[in-house]
Image (cartoon, rainbow, N blue to C red; front, side):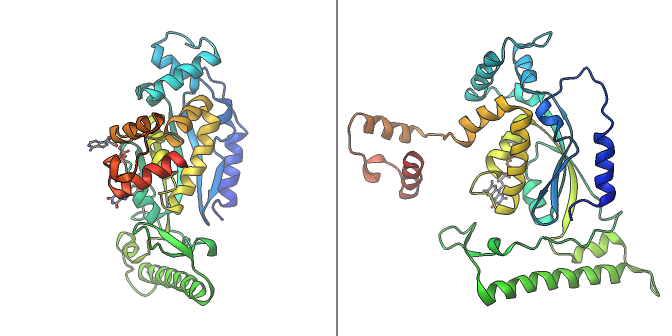
Length: 302
Ligand SMILES: Cc1cc2nc3c(=O)[nH]c(=O)nc-3n(C[C@H](O)[C@H](O)[C@H](O)COP(=O)(O)OP(=O)(O)OC[C@H]3O[C@@H](n4cnc5c(N)ncnc54)[C@H](O)[C@@H]3O)c2cc1C
């Protein structure tokens, strides 16, 4: 259960006491405020606060005194222009603060995104909960044979059952020992900051993560991508849905130019131009290495 009944009651109380404000309000984001979206078996993402909306991006781009909006259509065109030309600072004017509960091994990947502000739950100060990420059977997969940094076919039968059992029993044994080492019954009790080192990296941690929209798009571009590990991708997917409701025009431009678009090298562009002129171009005549050619063909042929 990602949220306890007490935490859910707290969220309800916050949602039941709206405050009047002169600040820009994004109606699509208001419905997400405080609400937790469940991710994996015990995790969640919830919006704690945000600043700005689509209009704020245009306002900043125009360095406007007032609302800055000429018309929704106009704003959409401007936002697409900014995205297309990597004019990124107007997107930095929007910010979001998220509360995320995630396994430690996912947190290790996430924390590599340095352009955010983080405050993590302290396992020196507090005792971690007995909550471990155990993959659903369909996500328990073998090592990929074509990609060293990925997984292949789903494990089945006895092997799947054995792996699941190992994951569960190791996690529980480590947690039992964590509690036993910290206990002060008949002993001094090991400090929390030391006892935690014996816990596996599928234990859950929590943090507040604040990031501006430009850097959030960068995070989503990398982590909502099919090359990202499933366990971080599901968080990125959940955040992407929130962003789509928060800044629909900016998210539309991001989907079009970044998620759905592609970067072409000068060589790749040359191949396309030669093909358009009717030339039969092969990997050998393209000047590209075999892997790059394969990726290029996949990209343009879909
Ligand atoms: C599929 C995938 C596989 C990966 N595999 C590995 C791996 O095997 N090993 C590994 O270590 N990492 C790996 N990473 C992590 C990756 O190398 C980046 O650390 C991570 O994606 C964060 O990206 P970033 O640095 O661009 O983001 P941020 O830290 O948010 O930075 C955003 C941008 O700000 C600029 N920036 C930020 N800080 C600095 C700085 N100090 N100096 C200069 N410019 C800066 C850069 O332009 C950067 O792109 C992987 C990531 C992905 C998505």
